[in-house]
Length: 83
Image (tube, rainbow, N blue to C red; front, side):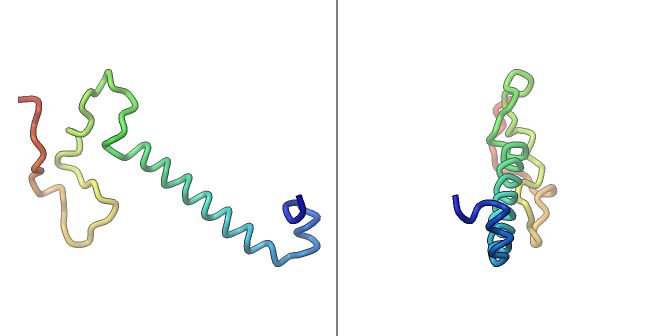
């Protein structure tokens, strides 16, 4: 396909910023999906060792960044199903 090879980049160097932006967007999307898959309490990878993983996040800060509030000091309104 024209414009996708190394020969086309040598002919038309104006395509380099386009490739850089597309690559940065793809890397950012893959990073964010990996972060969601490993850090999100809604995702369970090993159900046998921890059947209710959302209980671990009862007193932890779940938001990525919160300049106003410290969630580790607030009591969660989530119900406790262990009792």
